[in-house]
Length: 332
Ligand code: ASP
Image 1 (cartoon, rainbow, N blue to C red):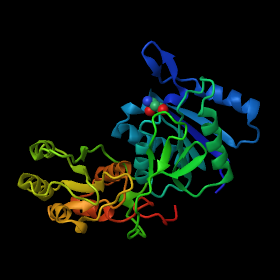
Image 2 (spheres, rainbow, N blue to C red; image 1 turned 90 degrees about the horizontal axis):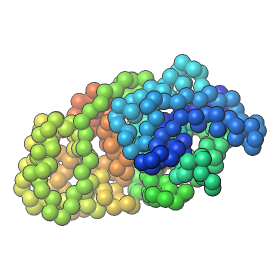
Image 3 (cartoon, rainbow, N blue to C red; image 1 turned 90 degrees about the vertical axis):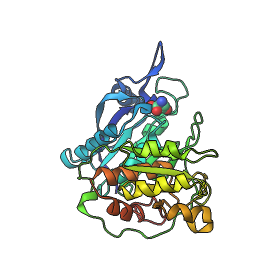
Image 4 (cartoon, rainbow, N blue to C red; image 1 turned 30 degrees about the vertical axis):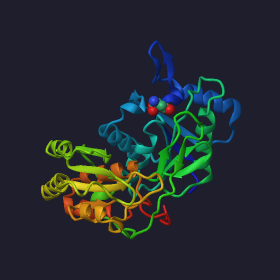
């Protein structure tokens, strides 16, 4: 769908930052720079409006409440302002997390949402900001199917499959080649629609590591956490010969905590049945996240638990593909 009435949302990030005594910090004034640059060099772009979100953030400070505010701003642009495409400018540090969270918070959004940012501010010579900004606007103008995407360095990536792989290269984002297959949800309830309000929810992401102390996991799980993304080894293994770990997992699951496993391997996916050290974890209530990335697992868990669904429903929707996060051939 070709867009001709766009909204540009500016949430902060390096792209519009200015130097301060403490280093780069978010700054307003990006709209004027963008309009001046367009007048000089970029004819024929569709009409766009610009909204600066408050407060402008270094995306390292992004919270669940900020994700909800981003989703609201997109919803408003589409449902109230009648925009047929949205470009969200965002810091790169948590860009992939926000793209994933918004992929699930905005299920059913009838227009495309592109997220982009830059490794260098617009004010730096040789910055990648202009290429990313105008490239994203051109992609929206050319037409893209509804859905959430991350656009960076001339590449259009799936919003729920992208990760930041470099802290300094312009080509900083990629889709990790993780196995994605499984059943796609042919429909989902209104409670998962982009119009559904969500609430913040207590979540944690934890990597297993040699010497993992299950009593620390217990302390965390007894502290009101509603869902955990456990980053397991390889195909979904962990120290299953530790009876305390199995007990902690079993108890937490019985209390209603959602336990979601993903693989620490960059190219990995969960297949618990390969090893006893995996199937023993699964027997305690740990659910396979398939080939989901950390960003997708966290964003999906948030969107489901934040919508107020109970444990069984959350586990049901976690195990199905909602938007291409669990299988590659989903039409987005
Ligand atoms: N720390 C910055 C941010 O995420 C980095 C960037 O935008 O590239 O906002």
